[in-house]
Image: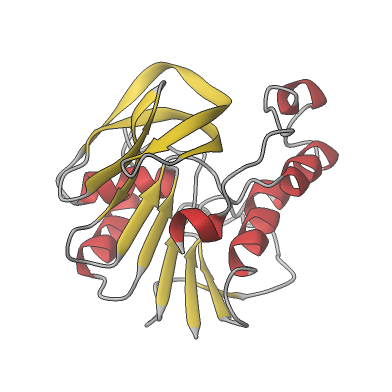
Length: 211
């Protein structure tokens, strides 16, 4: 299986390398390809093959990013084109959730302050889960995507496409306690910042939320 990661935190060891490692762990021995169109300064992972354009994959994941859909940059056009044309399963996380919505007729706006918290997510089937959020852009119109979950601070938390195999979440199911710990160890987050997340709660996994 060829797994293409649109790797938009490739310049970071924890949220990039370790976050992608968590994503990849839910697939059965995939052949991993890493595409980071936003930067020429990615760190070197100890897994995967770096590519300079999308490959003919069997499954695609678009990760979170430090960039913002509400502040569009030219490289995002390439990602948007991929979203519009893809025929294989596609999932999007945080920034991925936002750019998929924006590319399929939706709208993304900038909030006044960043949301950095663990919050309760309620799905349309009545189920409730805890999820870790860190974002400032919000999807306010989902376009072609069907909204399937919301939270108190964010009306559009999870979506699925009614006819295509596309699913997205605003939260970070790959941000496990281990990934957060490594972010502190690598200096990407302070201990005080990590304490904003109540990691004593049981969190929804990537497998549960997207796979």
